[in-house]
Amino acid sequence: MRGSIGRFLFAAFNALVVGLMVVPVLFVVWSAFYDSPFLSFPPPGYTLSWFSEALNHQAFLNGAITSLKLALCSSIIGVIIGTLASLVLVRTEFRGRGALNSILLSPLIVPNIVLGIALYMFFIWLADQGGLDLTTGFWGLLLAHVLLTLPWSVRLISANLIGLDRSVEEAAMNLGANGLKTFFHATVPQMRSGVIAAALFSFIISFENLEISLLLVGPGSTTLPIALMQYLEFNINPTVAAASTLQVVLIVGLLLLTDRHVKLSRIV
Image (cartoon, helix red, strand yellow):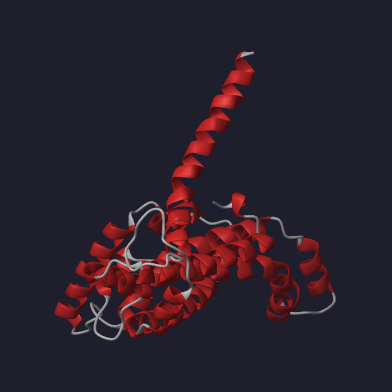
């Protein structure tokens, strides 16, 4: 009897937590279809015109282009570095391996706003000492987003590497393949699901980031989340809800695609 009550309470608590996370998103999606420039309940009607407004808003378009470029570049760089780091961490034994793993994963335990402030202060020091100003512009943002996505690449690719069958690589080397050919023709095909999942997840993390980007953006490098926040400073209408709905649809689609390659429950 006690066990049944405990399971019921646990299920009810999980449902409450999921509801608190999902219901606000559902309300944003719902408000994107309001046939009124003012948010009211119940809505007078429904329309798709706000999606047209969002898709034709120049600040949103520029922010989306910047976010796409940033997410693509950071995910590619993060996956390359993450693949090499995962191979070292999973396939080799050396002193300090645990420390290296902790360093690579440490951005996961640091709040993004703290990480952004630290990077901004480091970039100021770098500009003062070496004359290289990364505090505003695309390259500083890219370095920050690579740091943000790298831990997820390491986790996903490492989780995939642990379950690989080493006999395929041994067979390739026994047949005369050198280390490089074995890596590209035997190891990489087996790692494909982990690499694809890491790239997709890194893209999502970079594309939706606000806290770090907010401290490092400059003229011409405003990302979509920042453009949405700036729009809300002077306007309250369903246009921003429509733009947010499109962003949610993109992120959910990529998460579902990622889960097909590597079950997110294994690494999240």
